[in-house]
Length: 108
Image (cartoon, rainbow, N blue to C red; front, top):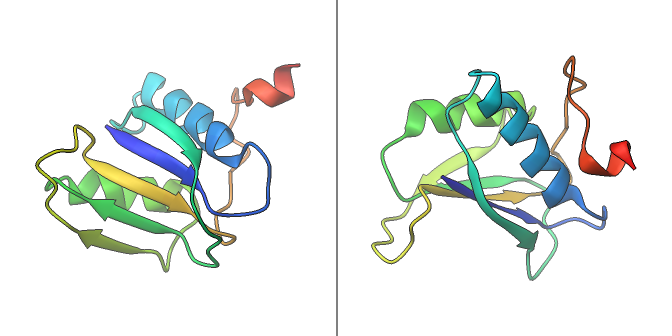
């Protein structure tokens, strides 16, 4: 389980990432589901993934799917969070054009 936040000026980026991750989860490519998304309180150049569980393999695959080769994955235990991780999407994030995947925005 992951929460996704947009730390860029691009509108609806967190929703687009959510749609893409749910697509990958549905196809069995990535075993991560999004439990919430929204806007971050500031802007970031580089994306960050903060893990509160030990699912580093899945989080590394997540970073790779989003084109975040230089993204640091940090570990910070948070007993109050029900999410395994938080993704803060910076300007470096890239949404791939996977076959069969369209964001909700693209469908309207």
